[in-house]
Picture 1 (cartoon, helix red, strand yellow):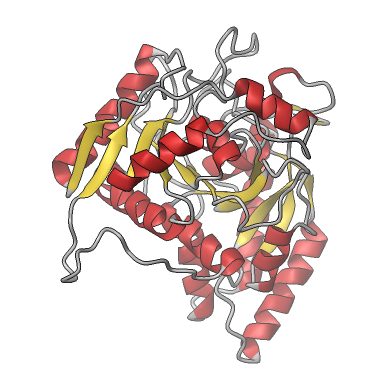
Picture 2 (cartoon, rainbow, N blue to C red):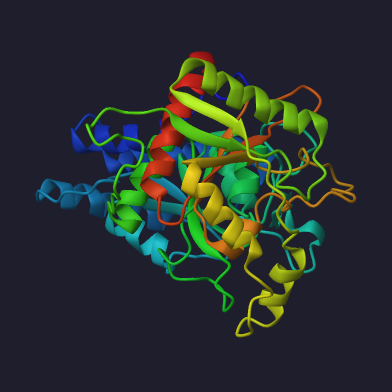
Amino acid sequence: MRNGAGHEDRLADAAGIAAAVARGRTSASAAVADALAAIRRLDGNTNAFCAVWDEWARERAAAVDAALGRGAALPLAGVPIGVKRSEGIESFQARRLVAAGAVPVGATAVPGPGTEWKTWGATDRGTTANPRRSGASPGGSSAGSGAAVAAGMVPMATASDGAGSTRIPAAWCGVVGYKPTTGLLPSRDAAGLTVGGPIARSVADIALYRRAVLGDGEARDASRSAGGRRRRLRVAWSATLGFNRVHAGVAAAATRALGEWERCAGVEVNEAGLALDDPAEQWRALRSRPQGTPCGDRNAARLAELFAGFDLLATPTTPNPPHGPGGPGDAMSVGLTWLFNITGHPAVSLPTAAPADCGPVGLQLIAGLHADAALLRAAADYERRVLAPTS
């Protein structure tokens, strides 16, 4: 498979590695050794990892191989993963991934203290680079996780998202990032805004993460009729959500991707006509007074009305393209993501064809509360029909 930058992927996806290890075509030890070699070869230019755990990872991989020899069933057997530094291996999601057979190989970089914009990962060797666009930010705060996956060092990395910190680096690095419905994972902050999630190379890997960390939890499939026949997904499109100023190239890339999906699949896209309130004040109030009363629920009510008539809401992932060292300027990179940290809706950022004047940007799909399974099925369909033909 080719990635959005046009060069060969350097490491198989998580699902492929797990299947190969489970069937005895390779071992966990070999898969982890490959990942460690990729980090040594590639991270000198990327600075995605602030620590690499060679010895521990090799020991853990050997333990996975031994468990498989005893007949253990491990759905992520031998899959090397990066772990967001601020999450660590003791986070709920990391512990679940390790229990499923994944092997953490190192800590991925996050912004250092006082880092403006929260989009540059910090390491002792320098800031984290964007593997898909020279000189551009990889996004944040899960900067190292996005860069490590995009560069082909690991197929999956843990992230966390309080305002878009999983989805933004996924968009700017041209990979996939998933924010689950709030409450499915323990909150990372008192306000309940920050939720863990994965950055991965494919939607199949995101689904594998979901099964390992969250359980199957398959809800009723609302995209099928009572007779069992699949109907057209109804997708509402909003470039701005009613309050953002969106870069023309970013909007065009997301519109083209959504249009291609509509042309080649059973998807019906309509303009949402949304006029939501800018959530900036509410988000900041919740962060500063996490036990206080929310500043209003008009956005939640409007979204509930929208999802009564549509299966999905689609937007660009960010209003702006990846910025350079000078920062985003007046653009609010979180402008299309942080509302859904307040409302709790599940969301996924998917790659689009990268405009030459923008660099990688993402298409964000949002589903109704607890419709995570349907969201990821739709994301997989988009990936198969829109991305696979040009992979």
